[in-house]
Image (tube, rainbow, N blue to C red; front, side, top):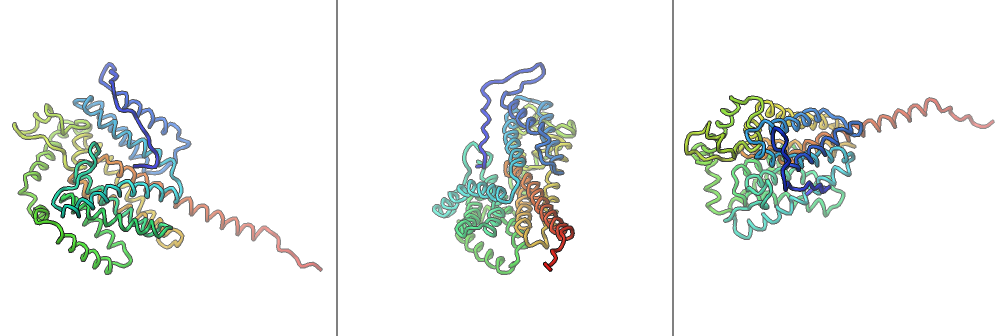
Length: 409
């Protein structure tokens, strides 16, 4: 899926220290990440690093203090793999060319799933649900729908600025495939994410009216194509409070809040929503455990109020950084690409915030990629301005200090 393939072996045995079990794969992941941070002189500094590093350190601390560290460790190990890759991306990508290469790889990888999903939806008339690849965090159709919605703004940037007409057309096709696949997942949260992204793209477009008309026509055609079962399911968005799955979400959210009343700082650790012995202390007898169904309650229940604060701080820093890029590039014709990418990045992050409010995907790789991308884009824009300032200063200095040639007598 990514530019660099970083393989960390799966755990096949466990090392036990005096206090708690620590799987070897987590120790390898932690050491690799700390080794990168230790080379501070090689690590480009940016304000987003502070909440990022603190958040990563905190989830390790909450795993140590978890009710069952051995259960929490597997999710921490998977999270640390994504953290390591994100850190390397942050260090290695430092030009516009590399940024766009990363975007193309992400879009191409997820675009394959979008193409399959769109073909399946059309072939079955929308009568069956599109699912993600097994064994991944997007195996769940709701998570797949949200991620595909996050890809749409990135594909839109490629369609605007790719040098090749073929790539631009492929990016537009990818956007269409993502939209059809999202409808095919029959995910209400996915439909909401798609609507958020569509609204954002329309508002950011220079041709709002024409794009709005095109979206209405295409949306109407797509909805008319979907079967009645899809329409019936989407209509329950208005009566979500009467839905059994919605009631289950509310129960898990209450569980997270009651748990953090007893452990406000550290929460219960990774995978607290699967620990039946812990849940039995807070849930009524006979109530089934479910996923947290919210990135916010996921982080709250697993890592406490401190973890939730660091998580929101990280997201806010990413959004503010992209807003600063838009401000810098607003009237600079050479940085139109950066302004557009900042707008598309914000759209993807907002999609994550809205769609993730009903999903347990707080540590999705694409979210970490976007946080790194916001800082990288800011660095590249600042470096571009600094280089132009230096060239201009050298030109003026040369004009002043170099004596004007005198005509020969």
